[in-house]
Length: 181
Image (cartoon, rainbow, N blue to C red; front, side, top):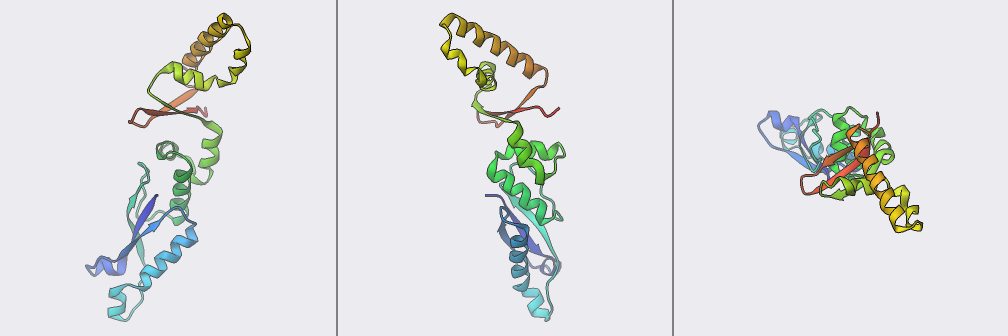
């Protein structure tokens, strides 16, 4: 579950640590409500008879390589967290690094996502990419083998030509997406 640690700057500037880990996969308004509650409990502000109003994001967890800055808007944080709850974080990180708007990212991934597979076997990727050819089961075995060989060759050409990208998860899993070029 993606989450952020939001700290009270009133306390931070007074040498105190006061903040809260907050579930980031909720609406920005809900995140802000939790921040306001955390600020209302500021020990420094209570001691000084004031009100804590300033905050910063000091840490994040489970964002899969997506950098969350201390001044990122809660809208951005929420959109990224929602995308990560729907898609593998490595895919989300890839599209963030490519400069995509987090608000539109889930729709973009949905349009381009082909699937995941174990290993780096190009033939396995070819089978996934060319799944449309399942009608080949109705053909004689020698024709099926020929069509499979052709589809694997076409998939290799498409991958070499940049029509598809693979994102390696590092655990033997890879994600395949159509290129959006």
